[in-house]
Amino acid sequence: MRAVAVIGIGKTAFGAFPDRDLRSLAVEAGRNALQDAEVEPGRIEAFYLGNFAGPSFVGQNHLAPYVAGALGITGVPATRFEAACASSGSAFFHAVSAVGAGLYDIVMVGGVEKMTSQPTPKVAEILAGAGDTNGEGKAGATFPALFGMIARRHMYQYGTTREMMAAVAVKNHANGAKNPLAHMRKTITMEQALNGKPVADPLTVYDCSLVSDGAAAVIIAPLEFAKRAVRILGIAQTSDYLALDSKADITTFEAVRKAGEKAYKMAGLGAADIDLAELHDCFTIAEIIATEDLGFAKKGEGGPYVLSGATCLNGERPVNTSGGLKAKGHPVGATGVGQICDIVQQLRGDAGERQVRKNSIGLAQNLGGSGATAVVTILGEAR
Image (tube, rainbow, N blue to C red; front, side):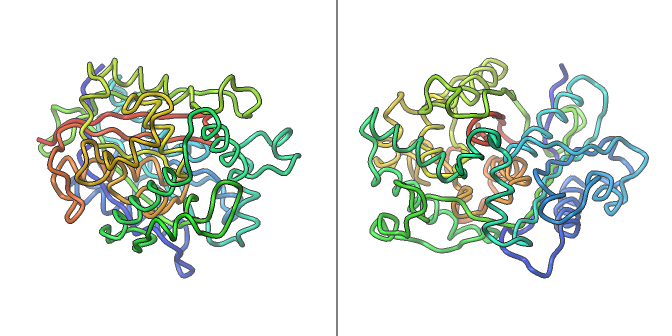
């Protein structure tokens, strides 16, 4: 397999944009990525788009050529990938696989979601379709309810506290406040996080990610083609059961653990080698569990690890310097590629107020549903 690199990145702001449609967001991110890579649309040999529920959110199908055409990219394969909140992470994995195999040289991977076009109850209903609709769905379980059960079990098994989950929210809001593209640029206190409006016990509104609009895009190419690039050292996508009652242990995401193992093996690295990470904090408990599944903390010790300050900007391993899904926003189809953009910014030294000192190797972890899909990517120092 050829070495593959990210040669260009582009994002929109994440937020609620009533005057923007899905295509305009995707096009803005795509154009930004083309400009950053110094690549013309005519040089793109394939277009991969991550999108979870455009047909349900905005009534538009056939989204890949719909977006690609608006970018001036025609006459090439244009394909949409759907893997719940890991849709663009999956698109990125398959694009990297294709370039690595020599099928294409220059590929664009985009991710987009326009969620605020629907009222909140409808958004919750659409998102619930990423779970087991015949079981959990019929019982009325939304994702906050499912992750509430995961959190409660983790608390029971390992002594995790609400303060530990609140520490994730406080940290990520502090980082998001420094991110000019974040949906919520607002710091919060531990007291606010603990006393937020209840959503699904033990989760409050401050434990839950945002309903957002937004898009992100990257250009990838063989490393030898690149003048300014961040190398993809390891990447893996794995899967697991959809329903929680099919899992042996709901306090771990087996797909994340396995994807991490495969990505580490491909990169020839281990957890100790990772300088910073963007983890999928759809709920605060998800970030805590990801730190355990990826080997940053021992099983059951993810909560104390966060509470210790280890994952803060000046900690031993900064996590979610972008603000994470919690503060940066979570336009679900854009999240995976957005994480790649955030890691590339850090490795290039372009993260502004959020820039970390140790920035040679970064990891991005994208989760679909309640752990049925996971994509883990390890990226190396810019050159």
